[in-house]
Image 1 (cartoon, rainbow, N blue to C red):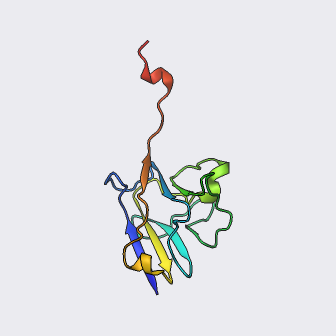
Image 2: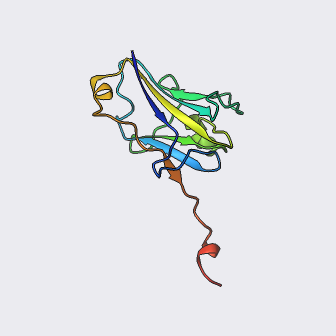
Image 3: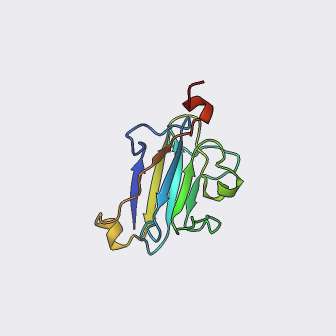
Length: 137
């Protein structure tokens, strides 16, 4: 038995696209409540896996190398380019076009099924503009 969550929009309501960078952050102890396993899988606009340099198409409970943040939360970086070597364990590479995310919860606990737990939003990471771009000369 499983519960599946499908997402092709960011928290801003825009179509997910590799031209932007995104994060999905699960609060401490708030990954999908399951007795089995959970996975976050990325598919391109035709709903196939995205060929990538890591041959990684999803992150899941079995990915023991994922790193948590100092506060215990788990951030997954969903973008075309590497988020940096220190964050690559938490990176399913995205295509340069539209894509979708599927969060699967296998053998879900009650709160996953009854809706009292929901996945976190897919947040657009806005690039920080250089100081010289913010101030007139």
